[in-house]
Each structure stands twice: as structure tokens, then as C-alpha cells.
Length: 303
Image (cartoon, rainbow, N blue to C red; front, side):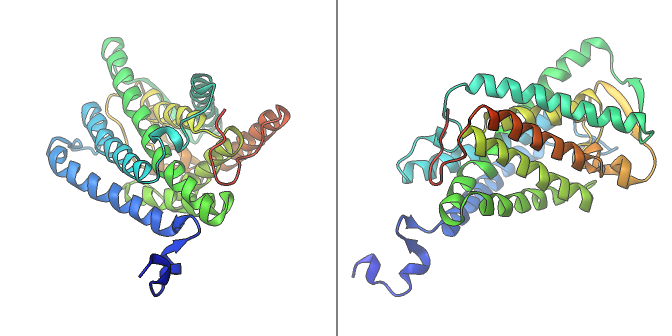
């Protein structure tokens, strides 16, 4: 009996092989199992402080336990599908330039949000939290940790999963479902709020817009890493409800959580939405005027 003669084969297989939903489910299962296995090994060495802050080395280890499984799961499915690991959003020209542009945009964006909150009285900056010597070391280690965050989360949600959902549903329907999953994943963070979860999903859609125009994830990786680094290390705010130890500046939220972000951090403020809308408009104007062709249906159109 051939595969096409098996009862109900159409529920599992389509014209292009295993259907998109099943492929994403296999990917998610692999990621989960690999993370759980690596977590059993590294988990005992990851501890938060009594005040809930995440130490620098613990943060780096935690990100490694997520980065390695995502790369491994992507590599396994890439091999099964006969594609290189970098196929899912990491090919194309101008990778370094796009990554550096993303870094700059991400830090500027979080700085604008923090300074607006400060000017409106919803965030108070209290000065430096650590001395110059330790500050440099912590800046570098947190920089590495948040680079891993950017790579891990972009590869997990807007790499293999986005490509596969595009194959099954089209780019933007797939992007919407993945953005919802991206937001819900952050619900495990203790200080996260419903508004913060919506903001995370909205950020995911902005990252998908960069993928739509450029065909690669390098800009999104840079933006993601710099935004988180600026929030957690440079300004010392909470980041999706998580507070980092060894941050440069000391601050505290003031006023209603709707405006200040409360325990979520600046990205939990309602003011993040006009900022994201502005970023999206600028992306359309910049890449649209440069004649960038939209994401081409079934494949990555990296440049």
C-alpha cells in the first residue's frame, strides 16, 4: 500500500509532503524535549537571587539552554527537508549591515520609550547602579546573553515555524498565529501582564514585517537583542517581567501600570503601541521606497 492509498493520508500529507501544521508540531516537540533534557543538566546551576533578580552568568546559561535546542531542532528538520540550516531566515546579502542597523534601531527605540516615560513622570531614573569596572564586564556578558535571546526567539518563531506556516496558510496568517504564540510564551514570566503579552505579540508582527521586506531575520535579531539589552542592562528596567542583576542604571516605575508598564517594564506600557506603529510605518516607507519586493510565497528571498 502506497502512502496515498492509506486511509486519511490527506490529513497528514499534502502535495508538498507533511502538512505545515504537523511539521510545526514536530518542530515544537523537538524543541521542548531538547530544552527539557538540557535543562536537567544545566538547570541546577541557574538560580535567581532572593529579590528575584537574575544573575549575569545564570542569564547566559539560561539562554544557552534555549539556543542550543532551537538550533538542533532546526538542523534536524532542515536535514530531513534537504535544506541548509541557514535557509530559514539567515541567508542573503548584507547580513552584517542589516544586523548592525537592527542593533541601532533597537537601542534607539527602547531609549525613546524610556525617555518619554521619564518625561511624563511614569519612570524615575535614579543614577548609576554599579561601578565603572564591573559595568563593562556585565555589559559584555549581558550583550552575549541578549544576542542569544535574539537568535533563539527569532529562529524559534520566525525561522522554521514562519517558513512552514507560510507554506500552509500564507505569510501573514502564519505570522498572526505565531505572534499569538510568541506573546503567550512570555506568560511564564512572573511579572508579565496581559497588556505586556499583547505588546510582545505586536513586536513579533513588527519583526515579521522586517522579514517580509528583507527576506531575512538579521535586522530583527539585532533589534531584539539591543531592545532587551537596553531595557535590562542599560536602563535597569524589568524586561517582560524579568529583572537582571548587574544593570548600569537604577530606576523605578511610577504611576498606574497601564502607563508605566509596572512589573512588566516599559514594554508593558500602553505607550509602546504608538511607538511600534511608528516603527512599522518607517519600515514600510524605507524598504518600500527602496523597491524591496515582498516575501516571496514559498521560499526565503534573502538579499
